[in-house]
Length: 223
Image (cartoon, rainbow, N blue to C red):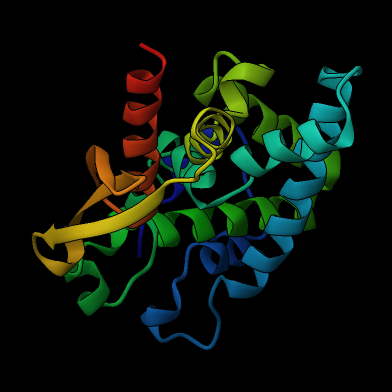
């Protein structure tokens, strides 16, 4: 059984019901009568509310559209994976041997889900205010600069807007190929604008590669 006492120290929260933290850390591959999917569902809703309220108060002059964009950049798989890594959450998750051998402890989806489950478990046991204190502290540690420019950066959207206004066309994204083993695949994406390749980038996912390529393309266009 994993020793999750260090995780409780990192969270600055000690579970009274130890079964609750065990359930939150149990991946479905572990083949127990319980897993963390229900707590993940709850944690997702709770975090959506907490981050929404946080941004509402932090940016009193921003409209709904801007706030939604910023929340979407925080409340997602990559955002929660960042917070999970801050907690070293992968070390504590209960997995099957097959999932362990498939680099499960470092998978974004698995880490993100476990983080949501932990927050759902804290909410169940201690309520909203405690969950808010813990999650916002983590959020601010992982994002030292929380402002509109930093958090609402979506390079693909920005590139689409600028190419549409300058050239009257939007870019397309082409997968050039992938390399590496299944658990450590890397994808290469090219951005094609008006029949010409204007940028290339690699990433751990197609989405990440697209964003990196869009960022490069934006720099080239703005030169």
